[in-house]
Image (tube, rainbow, N blue to C red; front, side, top):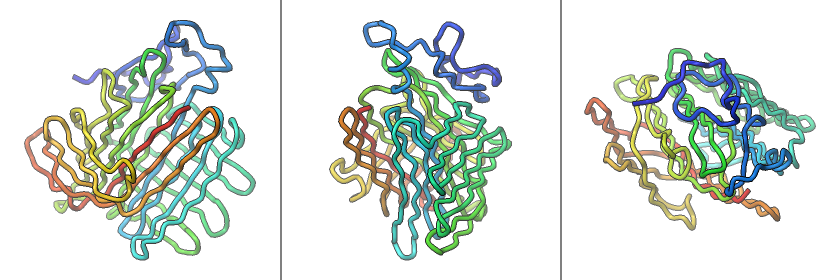
Length: 343
């Protein structure tokens, strides 16, 4: 049974300094991470300086249309922050990206409220993520040739929001919205892409917490319009958000249903080079993901390193719902992620 909290105006961290673990029907008012009683593995308290560098935050928007794939993220790693955006044009098979790396919290104004606004501004570049109970909106302008707006309508849809323990030293709060009611437009290097809610799909991942010093995860997200007119989004992972509670599940017409633990099989030497297989332990999900391209970000900065590969591509296979229906995934598109970090 899902453990739901009906206290959306209450911060995540309790007065005792510990998080509220489990699922949330509505998001907490704030991920008040500075109030967390952060300790090392042997129980000793961590300094405020150390806590500041150990707090991580990710805010990712992804969109797929029949013409293109778009991704954009704001990432706080403590020592550095990263903003990136990319477009993959399906007709030409061309991939184009922009990224910016800044030390500490320079250029990034982080809002630790799940319903709030975060902003990256560096020179003339600006990226804004706005979130409330009905709408998640991304606006960006990199230059005169690269700008856009993504609007994800989440009204009357189940929001996946949960907090899980991370080893004995941290926690992760993850919030993911089904993205089948998405609209907007993207201008990228002189080409205009319209985001039509009848044919497009999206995802929005907002995660914050104190993760392991060495972290690894796989992530698989699927979005699609089924032949009978229903919409499907699916989100599963392995290596994070699976301690005591799991983020694995799917949305059918905006209604969320959980899935069991998930296994990923792929070429770890070059994740974008060949097909992945993703399946749940009970066989409800049996999927094959074929990469068409990838966003890669490999860093090695003294005390931190990262190997990040976010693939996007086509999906086939099937999902068996809790009602026993078998859904063909061949009309869907998705992302698969391979990420190792030492931070």
